[in-house]
Structure formats: structure tokens, C-alpha cells
Length: 350
Image (cartoon, rainbow, N blue to C red; front, side, top):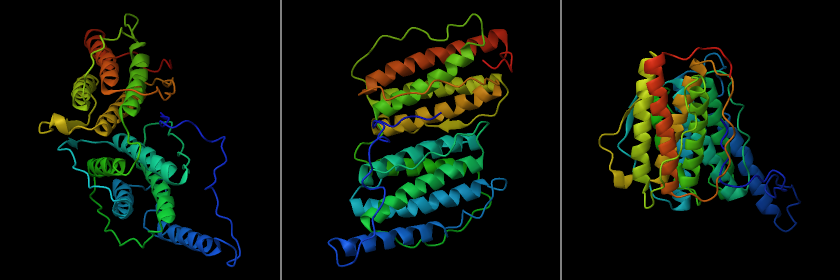
């Protein structure tokens, strides 16, 4: 499930920001280093007392994940003001019936964006928590949110804007849908803090990952053509065009879930203005599609996972639109096969 970010792997490079050497105060830069270390200590102190570290893996609830995201939003606002970035105009798109696995993939997007921000500012990345082997649960999403929080803490230290977190009231009745929509808004805002915002190349990778899932699912049917021919390339497409095509894909996935007698997340996008769609919105929708296909994959008991995706080079909305056309054709094929042949035989472990 790991998606490489657009930047090349720099793990082989020495990271000049990986530590802050302690020097005597009288040496050049001594006071600055003392201040940085003090800020790092404050950051760790506040991070350790924000209220979500006391839960165990077995008792993590959506409310715990929601609190963690709300603390991130406090830091995000401080960073936004420091960087002089605008507030995001959130899309008028809502969801219902979200499940923990949907929340997990939203949290994965949050982690990726926070990690990119950290890399841009201080050339540091947080290690991504291990991908769960089964269907993701709230504790898996919480690990990603914590890792994203640490990445943003490091940026706060660099900017010297560390501050105490005002307490946040835990909403015990919070649902996965509440958490999903909160992270969705956070993802849209943090993207505006990036110099290299999530764009068509990232969406292209997410659609390619979705294609990997559906290719393996189609392979369960002997008569299927898992990788159909690509549609004709049509230039001059805008992010809104790609978004609408991915909504078509989401509608078919809804039909597939209904055939499989599975409860599925509902997307309500009737009032979305096509002109307001950004490349980051396209990436977020593609990530949502990946989350639903990942769940379907595990429902079919397919043990083989899609191949890892790599940065495809510079892509434009028209390239993503064509890629999404392949995914649309795959989903239409799977829907037809499930209607005519029934559900695939489970447990074959392909």
C-alpha cells in the first residue's frame, strides 16, 4: 500500500538536519543551538501530554483518533499563520457510512502530506508505521496520525512556534465518518502549506495503485481481461474532469459492494463545483477509491498485493484522466462478471 512520494529516495544521503549538536554557549551559534534543543524538548513534552497516548491497541476508538487530528489542526493553524498561507476553501463534498479502513487511508494521506512538509522544511521524514496485514482498525489510523503529528512538531521546532496545546474535549460518540471528514479537511489545508503540492503525478500513482488491486481481483475470473487497452488520450483536461471520472469509478464500486452484500461508504457530491476542484482533491478521491478496493481485496481473501508504485515523472490531468479510464473499464468489467458469474471463489490466495 505504500506510495512513494514525488521526491526521489534520499535515505542514502547524509541529513544535515538529523541532529543538533550541543556546543558551548560561547561558541558561534551556541545560543541558537540551545534554543533549538529547548524547543525540541518542549515539543516532545507537549506531544506526550496531548491525551491520546494513554490508550492501548485494543481500546482505541474513533474518538481517540479524532482528538489526535484536532491537536494536529491546532499546530496546522500556527504553521499556516507563520508561513502566511491562506485558509482552504473546503469542497462541498460529504461522506456517510465511513468505516475504519476508510479512515486509515485518509490518515495515510495526512501522513504523506505532513512528511512532505517536513522534508521541504528540514529535510527530515518520519518512518511510516507498518502497514496492517488485515483490515485496518482505529489503532492503525492513530499510529499514522501520531507519526504525522511528529513530522509537524519537527517543523514547529524549526520555525520556533512551539506552544502548549489547549485541551480538547473527547467526543465519545464520534463515528468513523466524523473522523474521516475531519482528516479530509486537514488534508486539504496542509496541502496549501506545501511548496510542491500534491498534484497530477501523485493522483496518477494512486490511480495506478487502484488498478493494481482491481487487476488481481479480475484475475479470479478466467474470462476476464485484467488489463484492458487504454482509452484514447484526450488533451486539455482539467482536475475537475478527472474528479468526475473518478466519481464514476466510485459509483461502480458502490454497485460492486451492493452485489457482494457489503456496506459501503457513500459520497455526496451533488453540490461540488467542477471549477473548484484541485489536483490535491483528485489525489484524495483516488486514495479513497484505493481504500475501498483494499477492503474488497481482503474480503475476497486475495493474499497477493499490488505491485509497489513509483513516481511516474511529470504528469498532467489528461494523463490521469486516461489512467482513470483504464480503471473505469476494469471496474465495469468486474461488475459485469460478478452479476453474470457470482462472487469470485474466495481463499485462492492469488
